[in-house]
Each structure stands twice: as structure tokens, then as C-alpha cells.
Image 1 (tube, rainbow, N blue to C red):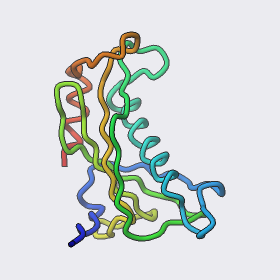
Image 2: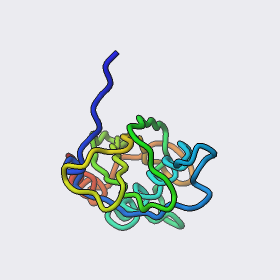
Image 3: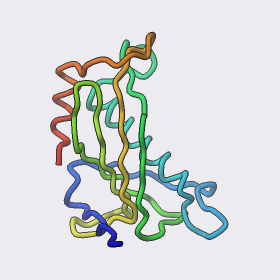
Image 4: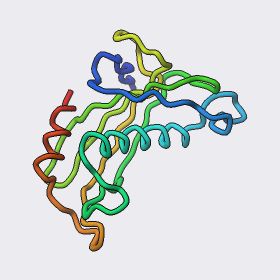
Length: 147
């Protein structure tokens, strides 16, 4: 069984640098796998709020996570800043598939990811929780992230 090589930082059009916390380390001395998902969720939602215009508190539409997955290549640990780099793999009528690469910050363009992940959001009506199509402005923001 062959394993995919880590993504390079240059493959991602945007990134957020996030600080690790003492509680992120596990007994083995590296960031616990659950903490990776929290970092990815934070970066994706920062993008959705700042660039795609999601109003997480009162907007009529919200994005819910329906699937995640992560491949780990090398360890990251506290105290270390993590660069969570993002790109959009696919935009559907009501969904978006994100790819995330996690890097020790600051990352150079040819640095390999410590972890590669995917993250699928579905846009839904806040009240009914039924899928809703992307408004043009949100779709345009996501399209800028296709990498």
C-alpha cells in the first residue's frame, strides 16, 4: 500500500496562523489528533465569516460539517504556531469540499504538510436545517479558493 506524499504549502491559496495550547499536547508529547480538527474548523470558519460572509450568530444560512478526514505525516507540538492552509477542492450546489494542510509556522512554499485533511461543509437553512444553494457572493468567495 502506497501513501500519498504530503502536500506542499504552495498548493494552498490562503492560510491562518493559529497558536497551539498546552492542552493540545497528548501524553506522547505531540498535538493530539482531535486538536487538529479544532484547528481546521477554526481556520475554515474564519474564512467563512471574513471572506464568504457567513453570519454565525444571526444569518439565515449556516454551514454544517458532514465529513472530515486527516492523514498525519509528522508531529507538531506545543508551543508551536500552526499554519492551517486552505484550498477548495470542489464546490457543489449546497456543499464545499475543503482541503487543509497543517504546517509548522512560518511555512515556506516548498515545506511539506505535517498533516493533510479534508473537510466537507453543507450550507443549510438555520431554522429548517435543510440544504440551501450557495448565494452568489459566497460561491464567488469559495471559487477564489479553488487550488
